[in-house]
Image (tube, rainbow, N blue to C red; front, side, top):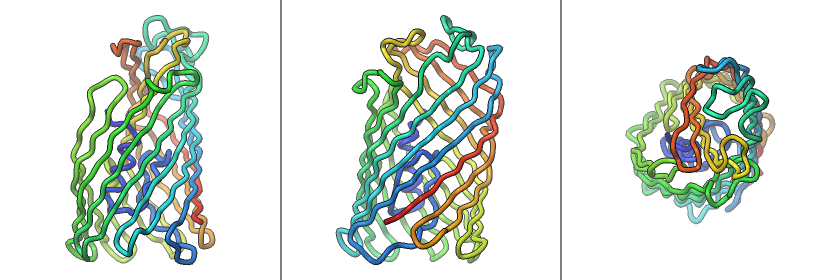
Length: 314
């Protein structure tokens, strides 16, 4: 399954967004631009978020799981010229998977505790975009990231890749993006996928836009408040510590589809607050040993989700 870092970056490409923070927001990267400070060749942004997914029964076990995440992203954009932009981001996310009665997850798992400690995902991205004229644009980005349990071999946790493509604006209200992306994966062959995205301004206040492997319908309620409905796919993968009692040197992946609604409120010129609520309607957990062999695949019931965050530009 695609790594979340690539999905998040695809979202930026699909929307012709000039800044990609690759934050922990599960590819929610098509927010309207926050009002900028006085013109500058280089600007920065900080984004923080917290997410909670309520307990859900795990198929094939007598237990359940709830998930807590905290994430932060530092991004920058630098104008090389009036038409060319250099962008980048450094991000980190912490996740806690609280599995209860986990003995049925895979052979050797125990009811006494979750099969791993807290999990981390870090990522670095650098990109270049150019507006050729009023209709055509080009973009290219490089990616390096890692997902790992505390104590895992960092070198065995690294993935890397990138994507490139072009955008074309048919009218003031409709634009399309096409390209290709590639990324290595922890326990599988490298992933190569096409990039297809669009942005359709239906009315002055209503727009429909793709976000990589997701879609948002956005209503600008007023100058400071936007409301949205969304559906998106996310994927995470983590390398386990060699000293893990149940999956030494193995890995764990979490793939899911989330639907819901959100609100985004502009507070002053530089600060935006965000809130989302919804449900993870499909989720799949996969467990691998150190040789890359899949030990088991488990799905769970839908999970309620709430997420809050802020974005500050300076």
